[in-house]
Length: 167
Picture 1: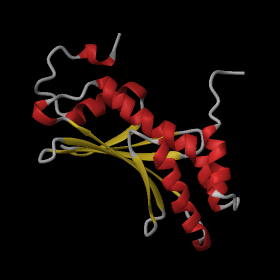
Picture 2 (picture 1 turned 30 degrees about the vertical axis):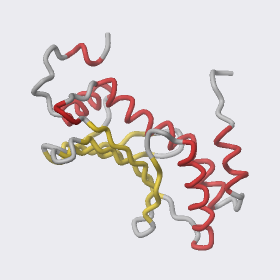
Picture 3 (picture 1 turned 90 degrees about the horizontal axis):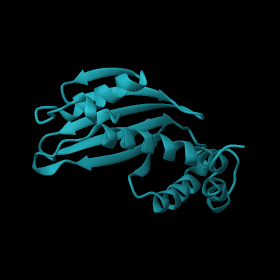
Picture 4 (picture 1 turned 90 degrees about the vertical axis):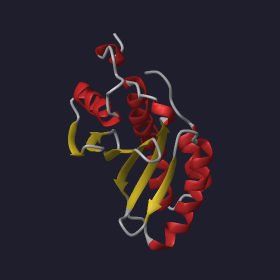
């Protein structure tokens, strides 16, 4: 059964209500910060990710921000930015940016729901899962570039060599 089958009429369902129901289904820790915002922590293989989703009425957009801490040496920030450009060229459903003042790597994505569209549970699930998947995929390349002193090109080869299936 699909997650969206739990609701027969979602016309009055707020997008953050949908996010909350997805978080409940996965038993993720979350906090309904406001009527239009929810924050949660999700454990990945490499990191814990702080994920916030917020609804903007004026833009009719559900914004997702997923962050994790990273504190590269100052002399490696240029290489990190070069790596982020290469990573973002591989991503179609969002983008990374580095917030140096907060020492946070940030994945951002916006789901436009113009004209009264309603976000389905599957869409929300895909948004969150995509944020986690791309972060997990490229985290080793970020570490190799910032702390391993690899070139961004060499670090990207690790991220591009995705393994599929199980051994």
